[in-house]
Image (tube, rainbow, N blue to C red; front, side):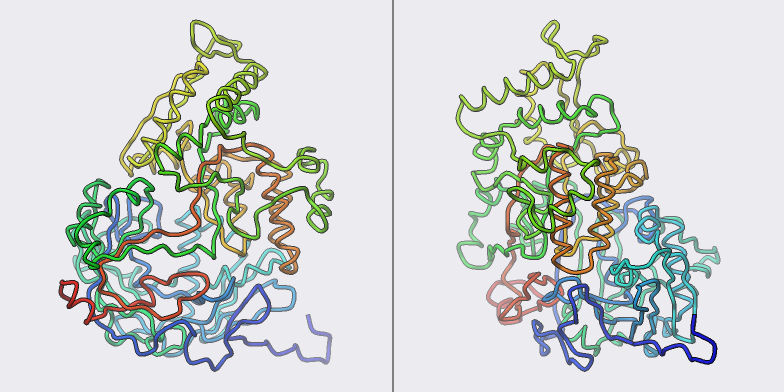
Length: 598
């Protein structure tokens, strides 16, 4: 509060926000360096999706929403692909926050419009925030530190936080999807009041560069570029949104989806199967240059892909059991047999980034760990994390003996060829899967576990059932992963925080509840500079690994892609993304050689 007789200081309005210092681009920048500002605006881009959909409302965790809906909505801010943790104004022309980061105020652009011509208002922003946090548990958790959102000017909205010093919160608020209050609180063509808390197949109103063109429920959805899009000439949008139409085709089976690509039924494919990458792309269109295979290095993210036991189940709560499951995984054999030797074993929750821990802790990381010494395993100070050794048959047998030893120490014994606990109950594991690609992985793992006396069932279900069981935490082990940015922050609470363990819809799949982990997450969130952030993340990574919460699987440091050769792209792609499809475009000359029409 200002002292009597003095005026409060005027807010400092900014065009962008960065956790790494000052934004790269000045207030008067014309466009991002990595775009082609003269990119043609034409062509049809066809993409594929595995599964189905039954709703055009992706706000609520009900049903299965269609892909691509982000194309029709604008957010307050948008990111740059050549910077880490930086945002620039989209719906907002300016942003302001006090020195203690206890609130943030966004000022909307006066020209921002919905597709029906009505202006995007401060009331829309407040209403959107209220609906997101009311109807979506994950969003409610993500924005849990926003105490209030209020209209504080004709075009201004202020978000007040329940804490100071959380430097990431202003940017988190900038990611809010703004929705049209007047549309959602109105009635549909039949005069029925709309309800944002329910799924719907009614085409929603947006403000973004695209609008829904056509929907075939469960099978396809297409979006057409809005010819009079209000934000087309903003610096953040120049050279982007270049396709006249983007269409998503749905496939229930990955084999059929791959064959459809070969048959030119869609244009671009990210290949996640090492086996298919090695064996499935030797077809005539590749040899003729009509299909391009290209890998793009992943510089902007790390990840932990793993077999994830459900710690909410008693049998997985003993760390020795989880470590035994790691010893039982023959990764070398799996990599050679299933993956054509393409993968490396994952050994960090921030794999392939500077945020991954290694060696023994030193310097600032050691200081951080010592500050929570009584809450973390003693081993983090004396022993770097290592997965079980890899090698030939002798090593595999030794690993299996170690696994059996750990299970005995945890109170299990073999009776009648089955591993049982002190009550005589058999140790069983069900692998819950939604992807056929993971089925062969689980089946490879199964015989080794059975040699230990474990009864193993591999259960594949459709995506809807999988999602429902995941939400209900009704599983033994799943195969999944957590993607990580180069600037970790509040999302770590959702991944590993105790408060998220029992919350439906969180990404704490394992059910981790640990005070030491909670304390280190806060160290990450409240880091004051990059050096402290890296050190705190190293410490968090090290302690997560030391608990053996998951059985790490594999990683690949690039994105494998295949595309029909109809598209142009900037000569130099941005540092932290290959930018497809946002900054690519339809190339008529290439398309003429490749075949296919717009």
